[in-house]
Structure formats: C-alpha cells, structure tokens
Image 1 (cartoon, rainbow, N blue to C red):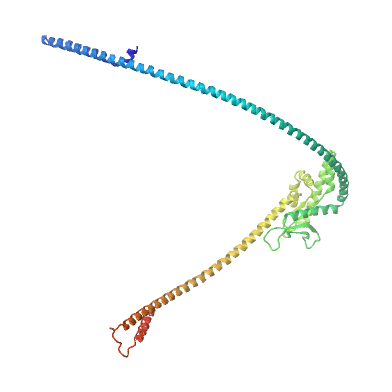
Image 2: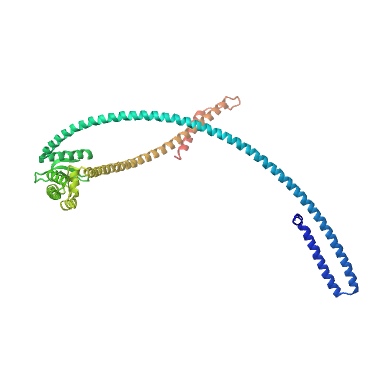
Length: 441
C-alpha cells in the first residue's frame, strides 16, 4: 500500500506507454489496410521499434519506481526518527512540567497552610478586639441611656411645669384676645414685622388717610414701585375674626357636623363683610391701586378660609380684595420689593445713559482739541525743519571760512586786494542765500 501511494509517477508513465502502444497498433492496422507488401515490412520494423521503446520506458519506469521506493524508505526513516525525537522531547517536557507542578503544589500547600494559620490568628485577635470594643460600647451605651433616661425624666418634669405655666398663659391669651382692640393690635404688629423684614425702609405708611372727605385710615399703605410723581399705594388691613374661628375649631373637636357647618357659614359671612368694608373704604383710585389686601394673622385661620369652596375667588372678583396669611404675604411683598429693585435699575440706567451722552460730547470736544494740536504740531514740524536747514547753512559757511583761513595762512596764497573785505563778502552771500532759501516759504 505504501508502494501504491508513493508511485503515482510510475503509474502515469505505464499508462502513457500503454496508450502509445495502442496508438501505434491502431496506426499500423490502418496502414496495413491501406498499403501492400512493402508497407508490411515497414510496419513490422515500426512494431519492433515501438516494442523496444516500450521496453525502454518500462525499464525507465521500473528504475523510477525503485528510486521512489528508496526515497519513500528514506522519508519514512526520517519521519520515524523525527517522531522519536519529538516523543522524547515531549516526554522530557512532561517530566519537567510534572516536577514543576509538584513543586508548585507543595509550595502552594505550604502557602495556604501559612495563610490559614495567619488568618486564624488574625480572626482570633479581631474577635478579641471586637469583644472588647463591644463590651466597652455596651457599657458606655448603657451608661448613656441611663443618663439620658434621667435627663428625660427631669425634662419631663420640667415640661410638665412649663405645660402648667403655658396653660395659665393660654388662659391669659384667651382673655387677651377676647378684646377686639387687642386682637387687632397683635395682627397689626405681626404685619408690621413682615413689612419691615421684606420691604426697604420708607416704602410704606401706617394709619394713612386715603380720602380727604373721610376720617377713615388704613393700617398700612405700601407705595407701589412705578414711575410717577405721586405713586399709588396698596392698602393692607389686618382682620382677626376669633369668635367664628374658635367656634369652628370647637365644632371640629367635638365632631359636630351641624355646628361645623354653621361655624363655617358664620366665618364666610364675616369674611365677606370685612372684604366689603375694605373695598368701600380703602380702594380709592388713583390714590390707591385697583385692589386691596385683607391679612389674616394665622395660617390656621387662612387654611380654614381657603377650605370654603370658591370664597377667595368670589371675594377677589366681587370686592377686588386679596385674602392672605402669614405664609403668602412675604411672597407678594418680595414681588413688590423686586419692583423697587427694577425701578432702581431703570433709574440707574437713565443715569448711565446721561453719563454716556455727556462723555460723547466731551469726546467730540476732545477730538477738536486734538485736531488743533495736530495742526500746531504740523506747523511746529515745518518750523523745526527750517531751523535745521538754516543751521546746516551756517555750518557749511563755517567750514568754508575754515578753508579760506587755511589758504590765507599758506605762503603761496595771493594777497587780498585792498578795499575788499572777505568777511563782508561772506556776510553778503549769507544774506543772499538766506533770502533765496526763505523765498519758497
């Protein structure tokens, strides 16, 4: 099987020889049918030649087959040798890896044992430290809790005394608020505090009379931030209907629906009456704006009023009165304060615009001054050029004078005729050249 697989060339050669024989036989047969006796002899010689050639090719194929067999044996020997070498190399590597793995396994087991011992020691130390800390924390927490309990007991006793005092004070407050004037003063003081906290100083008046033909005064009149010689004011009046509110709270506490409904109707009626009074007395355009504010001193009272369906909207729409409590009043006042800030910014913008206009005029004047300075500088530059030209002329004349002096000092020089003055001639030439130089100017 090795010979068959290793000698494809030999089999191809044999196939070619057989094919050539078949082709020769076919050609000879055709020639024998076509030719006579001479052709038979020729065909016999051709057959002999073809047989010899076939035998030579067979011999050559056998030689090639023998060489291919030797090559196959040599390759098989080299393959077996290489396979044996690779097997030995793999075995050696496997032995080395096994030895290394065993050493690593031993080292790893020792490391794991040491880590386990170290972890056990650390866990023991940690357990001891945690137990100690936990014991200390428990003791400290118990002491703190016990101290806190004692403090709370003392605070409770103190609070009970304060509650007793507060009960007495609540009774005093009830007696105090039973007076209508006292309730109004308390609401007015609270509203004044809110106004002082939010608005700038001098932005509102107290107890201001809005009509010349009436002696009615509003508690607070806030000046609105508008551009006007006499700005309009916003009238704010404080109301505290304690009786209706207390009846409502008592009905809610007693769980009496009929009394609660009656108290809500009474509170609604009171709010409508007060809003009508404010609209009649304190909405006076153009002295005031087109609306006024009714202030309720407590958020609880405002919440009960807001719970009445449609009451606030109807009061605002019918009487142009806005109902507000301590929680909403600062928001509206901050809006007014923002208007003051905007007005101040507008005034500051106008001042800046006027300043920029004045600066523009000054810049125009400065431009004229700079233009005059430029013309003067141009004239000064021409004067400086003329002075430099005259200085150069004087310097040149001085050099000529030096040359004339040297010529006079030499023995071969010609004496000056009597009656001639070199200095006078030079002066005359200076004057003529000066006139000639000044003529173009």
